[in-house]
Image (tube, rainbow, N blue to C red; front, side, top):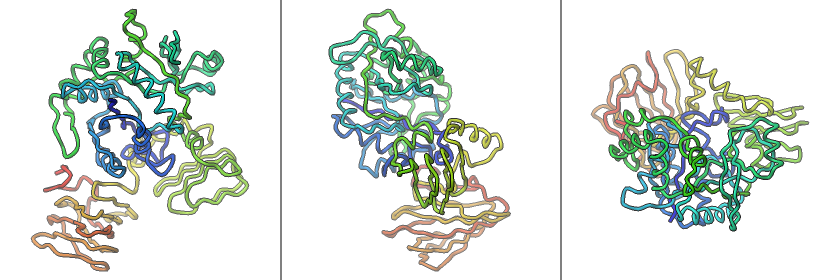
Amino acid sequence: MIVPVIMAGGSGSRLWPLSRSLYPKQFLNLAGEKTMLQNTIARLNGLEKSKPIVICNNEHRFIAAEQLQEIGVDSTIILEPVGRNTAPAIALAALKAIENGDDPSLLILAADHVIENEAEFVKVVELASEHADKGEVVTFGIVVNAPETGYGYIHRGESFNDGTFAVNQFVEKPDLATAKSFCESGEYYWNSGMFVFRASRYLEELAKYRPDILSTCRQCMENTSDDLDFVRIDESLFSKCPSESIDYAVMEPLCSSRDAAAKVVVVPLDANWNDIGSWSAIMDVNEKDENNNCLSGDVIAVDSKNCLVLGDDRLVSILGLDNMVIVDTKDTLLVADRSKVQQVKEIVEKLKTADRVEWKIHRQVYRPWGSYDSIDMGERYQVKRITVKPGAKLSVQMHRHRAEHWVVVSGTANVTNGDKTFLVSENQSTYIPIGQIHALENSGKVPLELIEVQTGSYLGEDDIVRLQDNYGRA
């Protein structure tokens, strides 16, 4: 039986402004109606598998849990308090998988890949799992169709009678001339970052090559705490763990080993794979019009070709453009030449340096109870449109520096305001003074929408003192 391990960390900075630190690309629907995380889970439907293990950042826990619930998937969600790359993340999953005495094969997947031919993917995974059952370490090599310089490569060696190969070497991202030679030789594959191996096999190799990582991860898993549906890792312990990829920590030294038993196998995968690493990749996996434009949202294109235009909630018009990327969100606008999209992360770095929030958070912010959209802001005031899901409740809280005025637009609010609890219906309002303990709940069956006007000397999100919370944030 296979245990899928979905790595859902990362910030996806090259897909800014749609992907941001607190809402990265794996939680967006960039290729179809489902999000990338949901699609990663859905493509496993043809496999015999156990409950998946999802590894994500602590800040993304409610997003991940809600998206898995939407598609009816029960999972174990391990929360990383800080990012430490793939080798420690997989170690946490492997230790979790064997805690009851089992030793399953782990299918290591990234949550932000697109694989269009899912039937072929399932077929290749089943072949890989046969090798993993024999104690071999298996990776998936993407069949090369162009001399890409943005991917690492796998050099294949001895062939086996089932169409798989031994791995000679993992190769760093090459320059263009080297990539062309790899492509022409037919002996190289793109490194997909996907693997299959027994949990114990991975831990055995990690103990051999990076015992420091394994030791720290063991301590972390011996000191976990359950938080609702999550497995929470101790931050003080995990922050001491070295940050290392599985390629550097295990795969490369394993391939260099002279131990004949240390076999690494590559299974070729030709299933229209894409790691969605740039805005150009978004064009590759979405439908285009007769002028090779990929348009989404309220967009009008005149005399334009080869453009990607993503609108949000307003009209975007383009005229006479070629080979451009335009991404419009509620608080930012990106206009870029398609040949320069790999440099988008440089904009993100400039935003960080300037101490701006646009690299980190959207204007519309999602919470476990719903969302809020900051529709206006000025000196000493802020206006938000708040949506509360049916049955959801915000924390019992207070603010030291701001007062709040609530006007219900639709639905009915169950309001706690000091020592009083009462209902506020459409077109009615209430006022929360500075320092007043209060709470907001939607006990109805339809979404509750209200306008909140904040006034005061400080309006930051950290001016919230939570006294009681249904989501473990108090």
